[in-house]
Image (cartoon, rainbow, N blue to C red):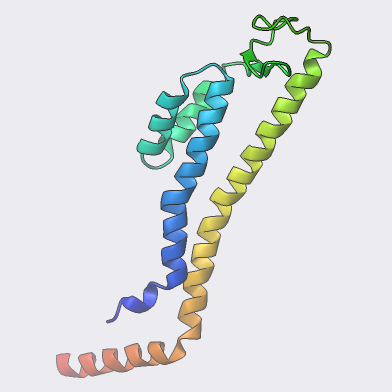
Length: 156
């Protein structure tokens, strides 16, 4: 039997995207999020990218929930704990602390939604590619059935 027909170019592209590009997107997200939360971003980047099966990413999502998101000073762009009313670096006064926190949360939620859509859409596209490729090559299917019948005749 020829196993080549099971592997379409769409499958290889999907595996490439799933195996290479998706961990890079997750790594960038984790690096930025860990930096905002005051965690070690390089350590978490290495854990998420090198630990197989998205276990590192799941571990990060579990452990980061206990860490509060820092806010960003609009004047000096440094990250500050949420409890401050004034930036300790440049002494910029924060008038509306909740507005700054909500803006950071909205950006984070948008990135997380895009990431989840990518994670869920890629396997579906891979399966659809396999099904489409197999149903468009009817001649190849008939050839495989013919070869199986010939093999069956030799075994009898």
